[in-house]
Length: 296
Ligand code: GDP
Ligand code: K
Ligand code: MG
Image (tube, rainbow, N blue to C red):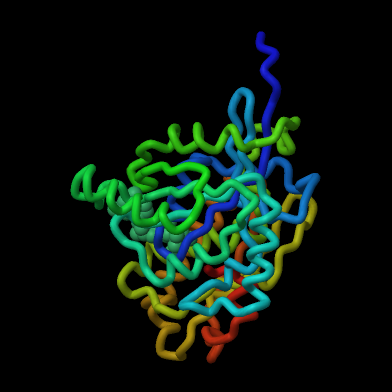
């Protein structure tokens, strides 16, 4: 028995593409996805992951506006929405890659809030040669912003993540947990269905995977305990269709069968799944389209 008060708060993970945000999130919350509680009681934030321990709950959130951050595309409006949302969380993790401090990193850094504690997270620890050069790198970065703390981690190898949580914990306000403790995401079934198909496409197409490809849920219907799901795989060019479909449709069949089995396990019910391939030209340049799919 303990009478330690519970702490719970919102934590944003920001950084330019490829610093390791998604990898870090996955390691912080573990692999199991629970969708037992589909509706979140709160908030203006979009929850991407939850880590609950005995006396604290860390709620990791997406930064609206940041999803569309690509190749220096931040404009004034986006800047404002990023700043607003970063100002309303309890703690921000600013990710960098060890030994790399680029113009894109500085662009993100310029959006960091002044009144919210920001922890500098130097990821890819395995890429640093030695302590001295790493320390020089940290000194260079910390000279440019008043960070509330610094932590060096390897998201990929799961190193020093406990130490990172130790740094964040003191910034979580005293509060009851906002989410059930077995819940790690509030992403809905529709989103998860698309993720599962995407994962199979990656697995079975490998090197052949068309660069410009996406997955769209065209129908998601509950029919009693049965879920009827129609998913379109969107490719950019007609000649990419057979790559996904395979000889005599064998690839697409394998992809949809495996996806269906995974969905049935995850949703704990029967699934009728149809997957087909469509050509959608020109979408890759369409920002609204990118946002709809939550690409970053
Ligand atoms: P995001 O774009 O910021 O979400 O970055 P990702 O999480 O997708 O990671 C980008 C790449 O960096 C992937 O290939 C990861 O495997 C890799 N990566 C992430 N963390 C580490 C790490 O600690 N060490 C190394 N060497 N690579 C990492
Ligand atoms: K990425
Ligand atoms: Mg990512």
